[in-house]
Length: 410
Image (cartoon, rainbow, N blue to C red; front, side):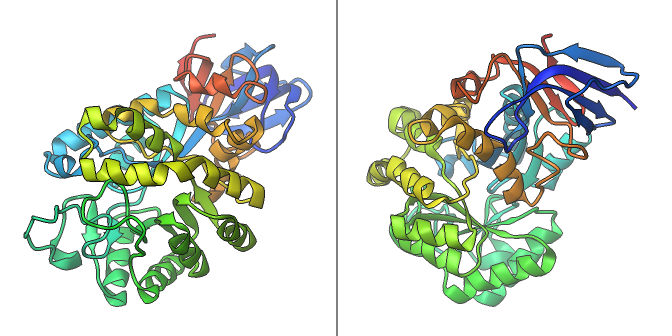
């Protein structure tokens, strides 16, 4: 059992709008044991004076695709699974280097990758995976090109490692059960057209109400939940009304729909980083022309959608959704959100709200007794300068995950 005591820290606890000054935090056997305004008199293996620095929870990225090695998904799904796994292992380590101690994979990663992290086979952020994405035939996660006449063949036979095609409430139910059997923490569905896919119109809704309801019901029975890819407001509204817990992207949301999400306590995970990355470097990296055209349609809505959700009081997690080499832009999400949101709002998105979305509030995304000891020490005050978290980990003197130092520059 290892004990670490941090002394004289300015603490952002994941919630409060002001730092808790001159506080002390004790970590024991992977968990936070005590948070105190007075000195902690424990026998400690490590004792660190953090005067002038901020102690805060590790960051949570609620929308990543660790296995997406390329901006062209058609190329990615044809790569050997061994290559995809090696890429994902590197991405997990790089995320932890940037201060992201927890990731929610939105499609592609499986239990093997999560086990490799948990067992210490590879260093990296703790991982909550969705397994394969559920898509209707011809939907956003049907990655066949329009001139590909290969058979999708439904849930039992189609398997590119990223998606499963389902076309009835019963097929959805079976696929949900199968992904949960495989260890998925949540289920990802695609409920509207998307940008990266080649053959589905962006503005169209996907799946029937009965199909979406089947996924929601089955997840609830299992103690899991549904996250839904949605761009247009019509798709967002429908998913919220059908009980989806987390709306991904929500790019083209309007004020009325944002108010509905807030009233229903439905979470949203905007993903600004991928939109800006594709506009800036997508063409050079080989993003298909049809996808670039769809991104140009979506892009004017991105900032305005964030404003609608802020004004309505929607609880927003932080997500990035980056592809391939663009995953190195993970920390740009902080600067992009700062165009609309206050630093405390962004910090909550990346900590306590992310934990709520995962169903792990009180365990992740906070500095409190009983929580996992996922801790960052920042050289400065991110409540005043959110840009400190946009430096790819350079402003982090300490990165601790589950009570173990991943980085200790002090």
